[in-house]
Amino acid sequence: MSDYAVRRLGEGDVSVGSSINALYAAAFEDDEHYLSAPPSGDYLRTCLSDPLFLAFVAEDEGKVVGALTGYELRKFEREASELYIYDLAVDEDYRREGVASALIEAVRSHGREIGATVVFVQADKDDAPPMALYAKFGKRGDHHHFDIEP
Figure 1 (spheres, rainbow, N blue to C red):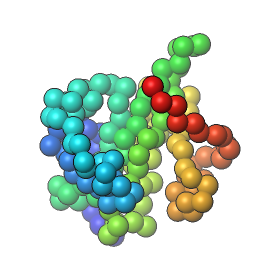
Figure 2: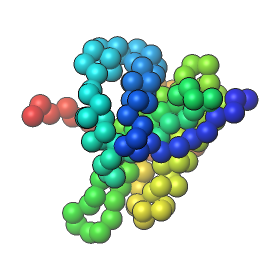
Figure 3: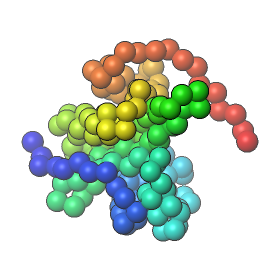
Figure 4: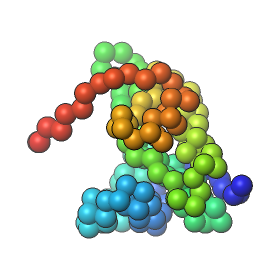
């Protein structure tokens, strides 16, 4: 088993952004979305300094081997937040070693610290590995997702 460490990124971690996007591009087979228009350092710094933006990495000797990005969503109807996992990926060489679970646990821990009411994530029903992973952590709800253009 690899010796990796999980940590939350902050505004001083701008240089890690390209490694995260490269990992996502490889894992999701989507270079166009993750690599074709890389964000500037200023943009990444803005994201990483926003307390509502979540970025966690698993690193093995300085190499990003897993990453999770998401958002804290503050509720309007009461003083509470929900956490949304937007992207989660693990380097192919580190899969089945608990990296994804460790990243999810880091988000859950953060959620407990801030009093979040739930952590939620979307998964495609035909994508068995993430469906099995997320089922270990909570109950499944079947919802519909719509992309609405701005």
